[in-house]
Amino acid sequence: MKLDATTIAALAEHLESCELQARDTTKITDAYPDMDWDDAYAIQFEIQRRKIARGHRIIGLKAGLTSHAKMKQMGVTTPVFGFLADNYAVPDGGECRISELIHPKIEPEITFVTKAALKGPGCHIGAVLAATDFVLPGIEVIDSRYRDFKFDLKSVVADNTSAARFVVGGRPRAVSEVDLRTVGIVLEKNGEPVAFGAGAAVLGHPAAAIAMLANHLGARGEEIPAGTLILSGGITEAVSVKAGDAVTLRVQGMGSTGLRFV
Image 1 (cartoon, helix red, strand yellow):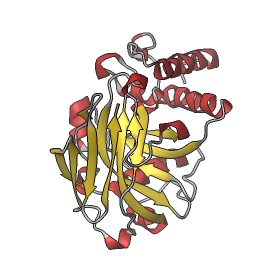
Image 2 (image 1 turned 90 degrees about the vertical axis):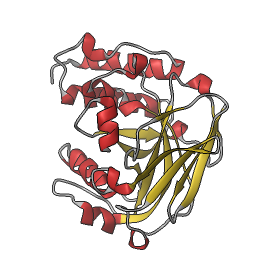
Image 3 (image 1 turned 120 degrees about the vertical axis):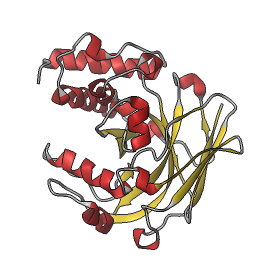
């Protein structure tokens, strides 16, 4: 690590304040160009600690930048991982307040819920499928705290991978009932299709993202507990939204989920 504990705490407070106050900032590597991956995840962990200290619960995990489309859109080559706090959850069909966000975008995702713990190293797709209770449609609302959505990978990791809101719904399905590589999705905004894709867009198989997350946590001596909700990453490029927009994700064989921006 390149940063001391005081600096990590200060950067976590800064980034979370930007989130809570819906204001943007320049990427933190502008001021700390030598920060490393351990620093970035330490800042993210401190943001998580701050939320728990205020009474929030961590209710899930997420993988980000897992599709080739997203990697190309953001100019990166490596997936990143973050957490989901309870105040990020939006009820299926519920409302998301634009005033609480900076420049939100939506991503269509396959959501996994585990029935057994997963731990790396050596976690693979087969282990993920065996440990999965069910999968269902999910929409993540990302909202980078960095000005104009411009960041490098270490900055976005520190910013909890742009996590902001999410919704899940539809018809839960066992992984034995659906081919997650070929399952098709349609993302609609105000009744019009705006993005199409298939599960294979996420690292060839959405479960690969979960395996990478388990291996990432395993390197830190942690695991994915049973009963964890995990967003496996955007299948398509992110789509911008504004107040008045209603969005729906339809996933082949899994029904739909959606939310409204007000």
